[in-house]
Length: 114
Image (cartoon, rainbow, N blue to C red; front, side, top):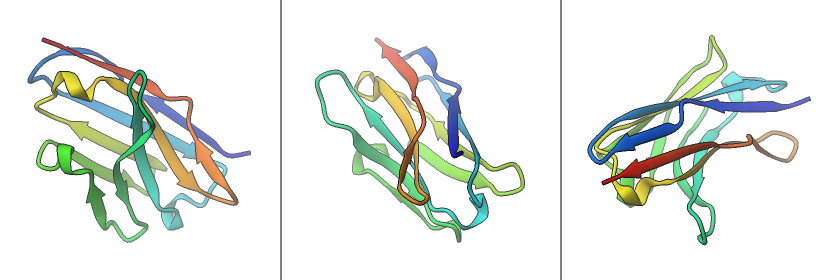
């Protein structure tokens, strides 16, 4: 069984920081490309950042320079460091991978208030 479990969400003021984590099980994490998505109320789910098995990263334009995605293959953990948070970053954040099908975590809420 594949499990992706997110943690680290919460409420923060504008300019603050949060670190999200996703712990994966049931997959060979070190060969899996991983990603973070987010979905704001009334909007479609969108890609925030992804990281390949080799560590190559890709970011959405509006988070470049503020967010950093990383992985720890020894701990099967994906991390999203979010700095300089803005109200527009408010959303539910989801961990994602493709492993014998699309896999999603349940999400973690991030709320940024001004």
